[in-house]
Length: 567
Image (cartoon, rainbow, N blue to C red; front, side):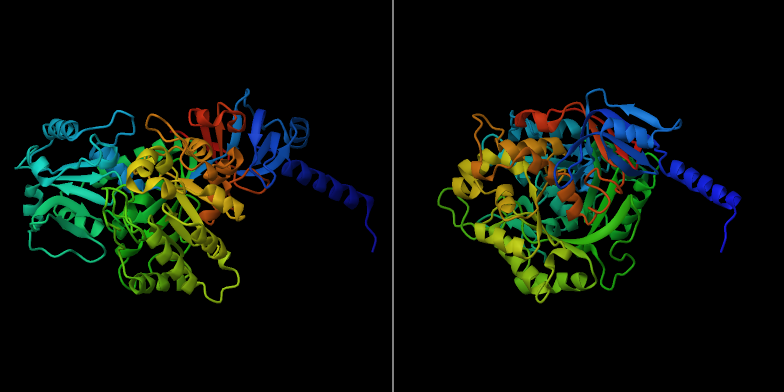
């Protein structure tokens, strides 16, 4: 077969045009440090983006020569640092929106702790602003960060705020709440009301009288059913504010870790779909359906349903309570109060929670189980081992344990064998470190909280998260917390120096490891060719900043799919 010279020339011209078109970058970043967080933790001089994906990294000369055209936008970092968009893999978006924007936010992460009197005064002041018929609802009281230590709101204390307006205040942990007697009356809870299933407790004193303390979500339900719900417009506005707040911390991907826990599954799915579909929504979200909220036979959402902005990937259960709230399930007693035999409680019997999680595992869902205490960690590991029996590649399921707070070396090894990806609320080391060490569990157990170095030694991944609103969203602070492990309360000390990690390891915990945990590491988590162009611009390079100061690095911009986000 013969080709004419005209056909050959035409073919060469077409090939040349295609090549030029392929090498036409939309945007090129240069002029600062660019941290790729690839397998070698390389830094490069320039990065090119086309159609929302990374098409080149390397020296400034080679990237600009190979990818710049007249239409390419050049972004001079002017000495700033670009790195993969930060990822917080465990956030309660809706609870954060409600607790921080719709209720009275009582959270206090300063070193000037509240007292029962100061909390009561804040509640009284807010009461004056309430429309008639509304409940007084608050979030963020924390007895472990109150003076004196473990000073608690009770029904009698809240009655001094009001006996006419029902009051409901959620503890900072989310696992405890406080109500006055008017709230009990409206909810129909009396001294003879039995505890609800699912770990709920209507706490009573030695005389069998209600104290005003509620433990676990099952105990909140009768009260929440009576509260006037916020309007759809107010909810959406609060969620949008929350999304922008999270993005302002350098986050490009996060989660709603308990879809359905507050407002019901259908309502929260619609709320998230509406928020994330907005043109100015600045985050990717991975959703985990809250197991107890899923109706029997539910199949309207299947694993990985959704899109790049909102995808449903897992199912979440809670196996115990809060360590700082003294409700997490331990194998050995708490050390506060002195001489106590208190172990905390599991929310489910072993066989019961196994029966709940197995159908979702069989459907292909990723599982996420909250386990703070080592007894809850044991339960979760044992049930995961049963689910994975015979699976030669357990790491493909990427089963999650949330918090992993009180733990043992043996549990770390078993988790690694099962391919589990643990996520640590590393703020436990910072905000609660002194309380854990000096009061709640003692030095030995406290030193193992957030055991990043132990997992690294075993060659396994781990992640850091906020559990917002339990602790503030701030991945740069998580890096500081993981590296220096200094507790906040003066005099500051290191909690568990053996669990310190390197800056690079801590960066990976909030980028590529977190992407892996969210089943998204093929698309995000590092700046590599072929991945989606999600990045954050910082005013300093965390690899060249003292660990304690990394928390103070300013976030300048976030980009998703090569587009700058507004927040």
